[in-house]
Image 1 (tube, rainbow, N blue to C red):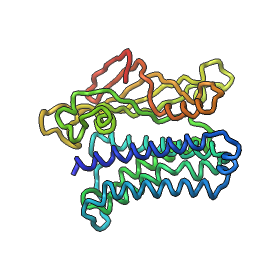
Image 2: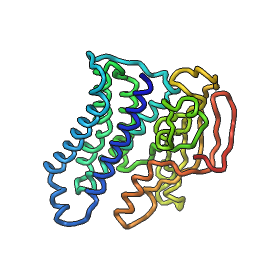
Image 3: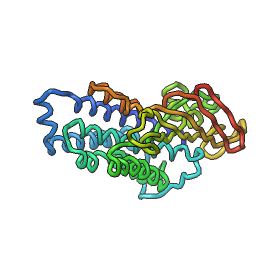
Length: 303
């Protein structure tokens, strides 16, 4: 069951990101005649609805149609993977909501409408996935996943509504680990698979913008400099236990400087959009780490 579930999660994320980045590319065109069409509410909503419906239909037939259906049921996976999967859900909801918002802003919509219709995009997509899980005999609807999805969406929308900007960003980074060799079906065998499946190598970050949160806006402190707190897990070859070898499963907490790419002053709109998309990735920087065993480590560059 776990094997199939992780294949589904990784592929769903790849399909979704491709669709949303494609949407951003289309909406970022600067042709005046295209911009007039993009401002039409019906056309924009219809296009997004078609993308949503198409992706959900494709996802269902690719991954769920081959499995037995069941009555709606729940599945408690809150103890899996040291909650790294929940951190991933929150980050995905945050990032997809940000992309949905930016897409509508590029389409010429005002901030309020863009936030109302674009911000919940991640929650809408991931809620549908949970419903599919709840109706499939191989999985189940997870309230833990839903709570994480709601947190990521609320973090983006709350900041945008309160501050009209993101002062706290969720980010992702990855480094290779030894663990996929012990269970490649769960943790991946190729680099793209490992980046999606190997929670041992993933770190989920909360990146805090120092100037906008803690300093006067007239300060000369660099507006793009952040401090980031990361969370990761280590020693995991299966979701809740390690059959063999018996690695010690530990939580890891990381502190590192960061760069907010969205605050780098650029005039080119395509480059500005590109930086907003790339800001999802935590740039390798020096870091210090403490794990749940009380061990401290320092890194010149932490990936």
